[in-house]
Every structure is written in structure tokens, then in C-alpha cells.
Image (cartoon, rainbow, N blue to C red; front, side):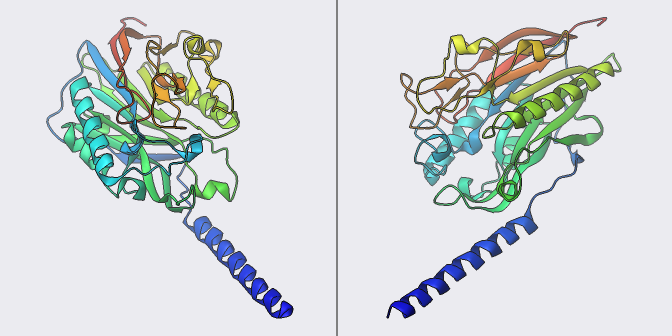
Length: 355
């Protein structure tokens, strides 16, 4: 009896090992491996407007419309699997779309936008955000593409997600650029993880040969810090290259790093709390500026449903602007994290002459 039991257990163990090995082989074969630079269609969707003396830009990590105030997530210390109920998901989506309409931005830099993911009921957010805000141009870059993400539990399943830039202006040449950022993860974890990138769109400025260059970004979150540092360094290099061409340059998004001085207002709490790295002011190229508003937090921890008194807050979202850009205003929209675990940040800019 004992030998039969051991034999059965051995067979079961062998089946598990073979199945696990087969699954790893499947993920390896299906791994998303983008090129260092890819050119993406950025079609004109309607009659475009022309940039004026000022341009209004919003950045918002919309959390795939799945991480509103009622949600928590196991990766942040909660228990949720990152998938709200279907009715709740659509309520979050409608809320995000409504807020984007109210903000009235000329350029929208959105992160965590799903195109076809199980966690967002395979709803094409790219198409609906582009059409819903009547964008004149739209460009989308994948940064997460996996046929089956095996974590958390229940598994996340299929994920097709990325960053989306929509605008009232036409993208120059109808083409955007996807620039691959360094991936800090090794095999096999890499196979089911994000492949971070920059999404670059260019807009003609009337009366000048210069372009307004918008860089949409979503930097690493769950690494040891080295990944974010390498990605940030590459970002700075690209920004300086664009400025050297005589362009006006704006980078905006979710940096997953706190902006200088914001920990004084929004300190990290005690205990086992996710603690982001800090963007150092002296690390910026000379003449460049971080632009953010820390009067309200831009991000919250998902260890529990949102509570304004007890939830851990951060300022992770904002912009970097080149020396030839004048910042007219910047404001974090305090939405109480109703529809996402991030609040949108809106900036209005002008263009300096002779710089």
C-alpha cells in the first residue's frame, strides 16, 4: 500500500513538473519582444486644430479602469486580484471618460490603457478613449502583452495593455515612435512582465521649424530601483537629444518615483509599505524642470479600499519640461481616487522665444 501511494504521488509530482515546464516553454515562446525602436501609426481622426500660444496637457494613469476607490490589490499588500465586478469596471470607465472631457486638454498622456485584457473584460479602451473624447489623433504603444499572466491568484490571464496619447493636433507624419526602455527582469519572470517604453509624438508649431515633442511614459514599479534608474537615465538622454534639435520637449506620465520635496508633505508610513525612489533635482539636465503639484497626492497605495485618513499617498505623476518651455500652471485634480489609483495632473505651457 505504501509503495503504491508513493508511486501515485511520484506520478502526480511528475505531471505537475512537466505541466509547469510546458507552461514556462509556452510563455517563453510567446514572450513579447519589441524592437529597440518601432514606428507606430498615429492617424488623424478628424479635422485637427493648430497649437496656439499655450497648450494644455494632462497625464493620467487610468489603472485600466479597474483600480477605483473600492479596490485593493495583492501586489500592494491587499487581497484583490485587480479585477473589479463588471458593472463597477464600466462605471470607472465612464467616470474616467467624463473627467477627461471636463479637463479639456489639448494632449492627453494616458497610462495603463487596456486594448484586450481579461482584467478589463476585453473592452477596447484604446478605441473608446480615442473616440469618446473626439481626439483628432491617437497613438498607442504596448508595454504589456502576455497571453496568460499566471499571477496573482486567481490569475490575471490575458493582458494587452499600454500607453495612449491622444490630441487635438495632428501628429507629424502620422507616425509616432515607441522607444524600448531597459527591462530589469531576467528569464523566466521577464516572460510575463511589462516591457516598459516611451511613446513619442511630434506636433508642428506654426511659424517655426521646431516641433512640440510629447513623451508619454510609465516607468518601472516593482523592481529593486536599478530598473527605474536605468530607464530614467535613458529618458534624460532622449530628452536632451530632442532639445538639441531645437524642439520644445515635454515628458509626462507615471514616474513611479516621488518628486523632489514631496515626502515632506506626503511621508512614507511605517511598516511594510511600498516605498518609491526619489527623483533627485540635481539629476536633471541643466535648465530642465520637474513640474508637479503636491497640494494633492497623485497616487495611492492599493493595500485596502481608499480611506482619505489612513491610505498611503504619493506624488508620482507629473512632467519634465525643456528650458525653452514656460510653465503657466500645473494642478493635480483631486478626484478622491474614485476611478483609478491615480489622480490626473494638468499642466498649461507656453513657448519661450529665442531659447
